[in-house]
Image (cartoon, rainbow, N blue to C red; front, side):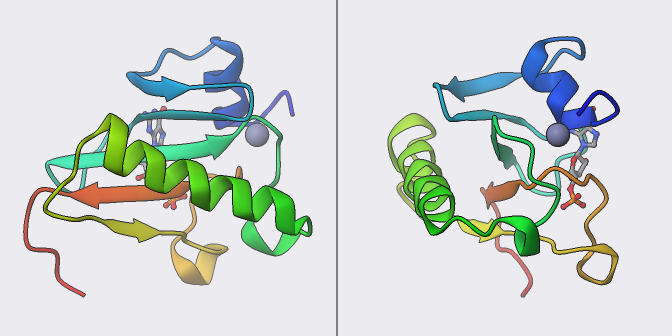
Length: 109
Ligand code: 5GP
Ligand code: ZN
């Protein structure tokens, strides 16, 4: 998707502070962190929002990769929160599916 911000981060057109990448996902620090640790995990495949992610394998892969990045790459031993904002009503601003990993402070619900 040529007009998608996160596709541009994947292809390197827009720089990012990467923490992990493989053939399926990219993880990078949020530009406006809402917690001391705030990392976004995105699939390389462009999927606009959770509703459009019809493939259970894609969803399973993302959840597996997110916990691996949180536990093994970021070493968030005290714990963390995973957030997916879905469409405008859920606070989604970038329409390329992404999971937020948040940690490092007491998070309000
Ligand atoms: P959403 O509200 O769509 O769930 O989350 C989008 C997130 O992307 C926001 O937390 C926002 O700060 C982050 N973001 C927006 N533009 C950029 C960018 O150019 N680079 C990075 N690293 N994060 C961005
Ligand atoms: Zn995209």
